[in-house]
Length: 637
Image (cartoon, rainbow, N blue to C red; front, top):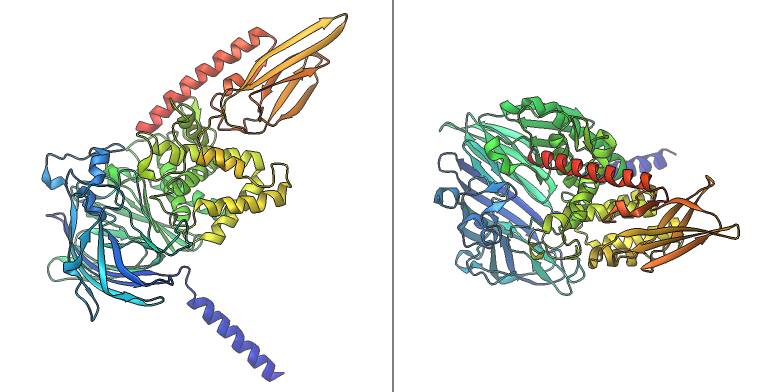
C-alpha cells in the first residue's frame, strides 16, 4: 500500500510540475531588447536579441522582417501614399521633417556566426513601390533546418513620428508601438492558405494592422528619471542610473507584440479583478473617467470569461492619451490597450466605455487567436465589433452608445446603420486583403458589416448555438493563427448537431453570400389585397426580395378577426404570393428583426388601415434621422 501511495504521489508531483512548465503558445519568436529613449530628439537606440525557431519541415534559406516605423519615413512609403497623411482623425504635418519617423538596422549578426548586415535588402511583396522600406529580407548562408533555432543580435536606431497611426510622440507623451525589427510569420504548406512554405510578411498599409508569432519578450527601457512608464507584460524591476535616467524591465510571455508608453504627467491607479491587476494610466485632466475605464474593463473581462474563456494574463493596462496625442487612442497590444475620453464627457455619451470594451476584446481575437490582420482583418475587427455590441447592449442599454437628452442608440444598432446606409452596400465582398478594399469601405466591411452578419447568424441559429460555436472556435484555435475557413468548419460541425438539417447539411450557403460575395438583402411587403365575393372572403399577400441575397425568414400575419399566424418564407424566390380564407389586417416580414442585414426595415410591414401605416412610416423616418444625428454626436465626442 505504501509503495502504491508513493508511486501515486510521485505521479501527481510529476503532473503538477509538467503543468507548471507548460506554455500557452509555441513561442516561436523570442526577444530580449534593451532600448533607450531620447525624449528631446524623439529617438530610440536599441539592442535586440531574437531567438527564432523553425517549427516547419522546411529548410529556411532567408528571414523576413517588418520595419513598421518606415511607413512614416517620408511621403513615398506605401502607407503615406495610400493614406495621404490622414488616418481617422489623425493628420500628419508633412511640411515638417521632424514629424516623420523611421527605423534603421545598424547591424545584424548570427550569434557566433555570419554577419548579415550587408545582405539586408528591402522588398515590396504587395506592390511595385520600390521606395517602400517596411519589409526586409535577409538570406542565410547556412539554411536553418527543421526544429533548429537561430539567434540574431540586432542593433537598431529609430526616430518616432508625431503621433500618427497610433504610435509616436506628442510633446512629452510617447506611445511606442511597432518600434523594433520584428520577424514575419513563416507559414508551412497547409497552414492557413499556404500551398507551399512561405514567409507571410506584408508591407505596412494604411488599412492594415499586424500578424506575428507568439513568444516571450524581456524588454529593458531606459527613460528620464522623472518619467513614468507602462508596458506590455509584467513589471520586473527598476534601476536608477547615474545620468539622470532609469531602466525599467518588463517581461511578457506568450504574446506576439510589445508596446510601451511613457510620460512625466501620468497619474496611475490600480484595481484588482480576480487574478488580473488592472492599471489605468491617466492624464491629469481625464481622471474623471478613471472609474468608467475600470468598470468597462471589468464588464468586458467578466463577459469574455463567461462566454469565451479565461483571460490568461495577470495584468491589463489601460492607457489614456492626451488630447494632442488622441491619435494613439483606440489601439490594442497584448495586455495593453489605449483608450480615449474627453474632459467633462457626460455619462450618456459612452465613448470611454465603447473604446475600452472594444480594445479589450482584441485580447481574445487579436491577442490570443492572432489571425492575420493583413489578409483577414474582419476575423479580428468584425468578430470583436460583434462582441462589443453584445457587451455594451447587455451592460449599458438602453442607449448603450448614446443616452443623452432623451435620445438613445444602442451599440449594435450603430453597427448595422453604418452598413445599411452605404450608397453601394454591394460594392465589395468582405473576404479580401485589407489594403485592397475599395476606397472608403475598409472600416464598414471589416468592422460593422461583419458584426452585422454575425448578429444575423446569431439570430438565425440561436444564441446558445452561437455561443457554443464561438467558444469552440476560441478554445480550439487560441495561440494557433486560424483562418476564417477554420471558423466556418466549426459552424458546419455544430449547427447540424444542434438544429439537424433545418438550415441544410451545412452553412456554406450563408458564408458564400455574406463573406465571399456581396449580394444585398431587402425584404419588402408589396401589398395586401382583401376581396369578398358572394359572402366568401379571400386575402392575398405579396412579399418581395428587392435584393439578391437569399435568407430564410418569417412573416407575421394579423387577421381582421384578431387572430394571427407566423409562416415561414425560405426567401429563395424574388417574390411570393400567399392566400388566406379570411381578411388580413396587417403583416410584417421578419417581425423580430432577426435579419439584421436587411437594408430597410421600413418596407417590411403593411397595414390595411392607411392612417396607422402613415403614422408608423413617418415615426420611423423621424427616429431614423434622430439616430443619425446622435450617432454623429457620438463620433465626434
